[in-house]
Length: 334
Image (cartoon, rainbow, N blue to C red; front, side, top):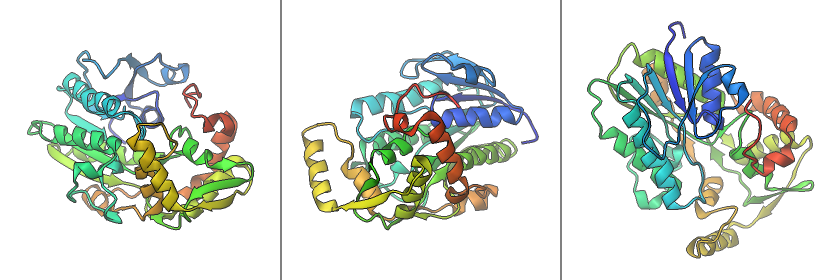
């Protein structure tokens, strides 16, 4: 990025937000991160910090670019909690950044239902078919799109299953499958799925900024993922081996009883480590079509799982993969 910008990034203490802060600070931009808690020292060494709870109205923000990455990412959180963080929180960020020319919203592939094996940006979706998390992200998108963008630019990015060093969402879920030398998986997981390395997401945001500061205006929606999908069984096996330092033997659990159990737990509002939606994700082919972002702004993802697996494993071993399995929110900002 040749020109330098003032960037305001929400969710700066989370996985994706922290990666965005590091990426743009390293390229010489003026970055201010925002989060609900106290800023980690490592963040303050590379960026400014604005402590704010987005579930409440925020003070006005001045920046060239807003990257809204803060969210509750969960398929087991309550509808109320998701609506507060992901819908009301978005509105508060929008209100505080009305003077910022470019608003980039980090959404999710969870805004697509599981009826189709491949997803394009303008496919129709019925909200009742989405998870509570997916509905909250889709409702946030729909509200944003209805605002006036005649003098500003909105870009919505939809990544799928963001992974990489620092991941405290996807990796902990995978690690909970491991018991001793075995990994207990739902079905055979021989399905194709898109994944998004966090470095590819950061690179896509950089391309968006470069393109839409030169050609501003309107609403633009793009899928973002690695260049090609992966067979989930091979991808998960490789990641677990890199993180645990040994090969993991898979034990397949039939999907039918798991789906029945998930349905019962959901109807009774009981906590569970998996849901009907998460089972559908790993049991069905789920691919993001990324032709639009390539054709529109020329973005081609530079990173892939196989090349980056060693880096993910090294990070997980450095922080302790057993602690990572517990999704400890106090893991260091790195």
